[in-house]
Image (cartoon, rainbow over all chains, first blue to last red; front, side, top):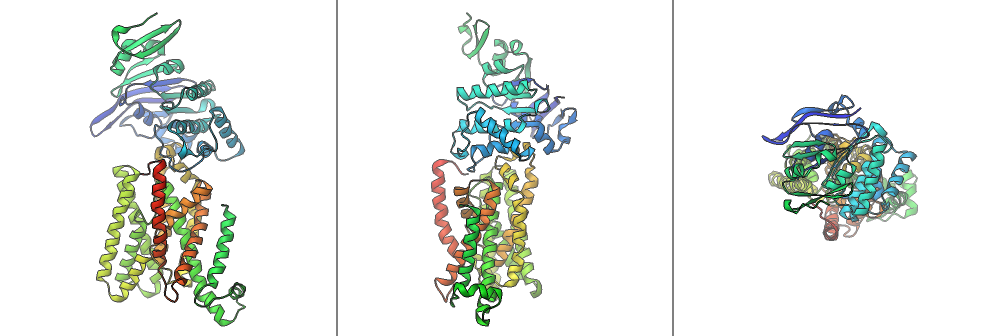
Length: 259
Length: 326
């Protein structure tokens, strides 16, 4: 029971976007992809979600070739949040979240899940989606994807491409709380994000990506070193310690502040 | 606005419309005439002349409006419209071509409808193809504008080449009119409610596709398959509509918009409500078109464009305040 991407790569017109990469995700595991813009994180996500066909390699979902599974089956096992959604119709927030349950059919239980998530994330159910701010829209889309795999436990996976970039601090905390709850219920999580500190906080495993390849992978404590981060982001990183906690801050190398 | 209110309004409009015209038939005589118990003259007016025209207005108005709503969902753009993206013009071009080649008399109506359907289908496919190659919905709308211009200039060229009699028939499409309504036209138009029923079955999928192609796939909806089905059905409906009544602009754009303003965006509601409201509005417009200048008659397409055009501009201005449309 796991997602296995082996040797997946992607190139367009002779340009390599993603070099051959292996990645596996186990139930209950939270894996975070970190890296600069254009590192191939979203491409890797799209391959693992089955949206992009890899130029080489293959993806298996619970030992079945992913692209051999029908999209109905995939919709029940993979909840996917992409970076952009083009929704431009005045649906209510609740209607959008409910779209996430559509692979499961419409029943009373489905509606209860939608209502529960709306309450959990503090969404205004009747707000018109097109009138919402960027952050509010993102929260609704996150709730929609949560709804899709809610209650699936260890049989489903969540692939989230920058789920929190536009969220305010409170809603980031709300989303993180739900993510932890989902991971505990056995769900495998693969998340692309830019916030290194949050990644260090929630990840069981971190993959640092740069120029279409993984340059370091492992437990946050092993991977998140100043040297690795500098090599990944091409900018100096300062590591701040406060007791057992570690914080990262972009900054000049000599200004190292270790207490 | 509730669906049943629209049903009641539509039924009332049918009764009133049948009574209106150069010979006024009081409401009290309309129903006996429909049931066959009125005098021969009233029966002839109501049953043979006005009823087919009224039914045709309702069927075509319903079809154009609901397929407008479906195409807007599919293109994820509230400003898409069969007439704007070239479907109607493509259908008109092929209908004109059929007239010029001279379809055999016996099958003229069905041949005309089939030909218009093919034209609508080709136009929509080109728009989708350009959109998928060059990316983006704005590209598709721009491609639609180009198709529209090309098809209409084709209609212009054909009218230049045509005989006087053919010219009359061709210019009828350019303007849009229900003048040619008769019972056999209504018979052909009965395909519209069938196609609408099939379109209604795509409601949930249309809701999902508005999220985006990739999002739809992750929710188990194949955008390619949905696109093929919806475009086929819309081309059937618009093709038949254009073959029978010519190009009726703006109805497919304005009606779904009005529906969404008051009834939300779920296609389970938007499609049937657009059909009812569209049938109602085209019937009202046609009743006006044939009575205001009586005994002369205004092509109803001119009327819908005269009212719909400014309303469209108003919508653009209103929408631009809140968000980017293209």
